[in-house]
Length: 453
Image 1 (cartoon, rainbow, N blue to C red):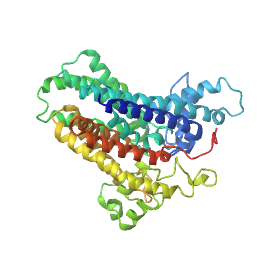
Image 2: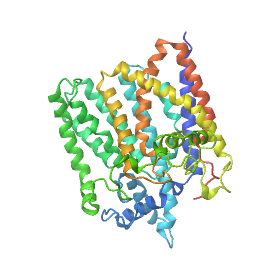
Image 3: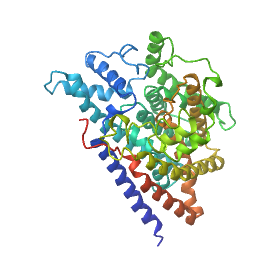
Image 4: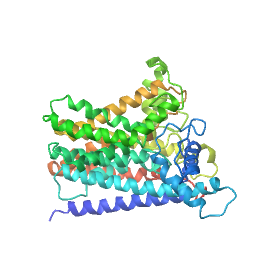
């Protein structure tokens, strides 16, 4: 009897248990008020909840600097705020209900993250024609991304993008297997998913151009059926989400408004150090990768923020150095995390490239590859259009969709390796498990129990 499947189930169960532990631990040790631009996000929630349930109004730039965000990520906390103010006694409901809807948001987004992983496992099972949903290669790699746990602990729209993206990938594969012969319910669910992505965050729009690009490739043999599927789905998505962007254009003069004035596109908007890391950047990446050491350097900042907490909004924060655990030595720990994560990143990128080359005849695989490329290019252009001296807009959370897509595609070949070269597969799994154990502290908030509640 082959002991590998049984051992895989044990490892899968242990990682699952550890992920639940991380989510529960962070619920008790982290408050969303510590998140990126948290006060502005809370102001967005408070503005919406002020008018619920009688009416629904969106804030302007005068109400919050996060006015440009679609409202979906704020509805659960806003509804929670309404419920809270009707059941507690207080002299300041907005202030006293903030911890309540912060906690509710963390719970909701944690469950949404779990369902995101579950849906992706179903999609991978379908793609691999597997009898077993327990895909250890995918689950282990996705669980290594520290950015996941930070993102779902804050009040943000990105967890919603991940959730709807998982449904989107499932539907793309399902419809591909049907050769784009779709029923009305398929088109309706696609439209709902498109609207969900569009109403989560503006970054979600970077997931749509690949569908247009693929129409002009040879891989789409039945272009009529392809159009019959995507055109009405896009219309449904537009009718359900377009109102927000039309309203944004009317109030702000742009469908893609932001809280900064953009510059005319020019590579000179950013200094040379933004594009190419210096020896000093590389030294700090593997010595003390916390702000401000990487100083607006794109590659090293994004890497440090993906695997650690470069900006200090989760594992540590400069405002609470005297309270948080291990605050003064956290940079040394993240340096080791980054060194180890080089190997993790190389594993993932290698399997990503091999997966694409081997399975690029699949529409789903081609979509993922294009979505990764366009997400990267779109984000890079954004950083050039909106230069910030300290690189404050370089955050892995903003492009978390890209990292999830990379891991998804990489896991396809990684899983195939199990039947092709079991020894190599086992070695990589073992290595990633060691990395996971070493990096575990980067998944946890380092603050005392219920400090902000």
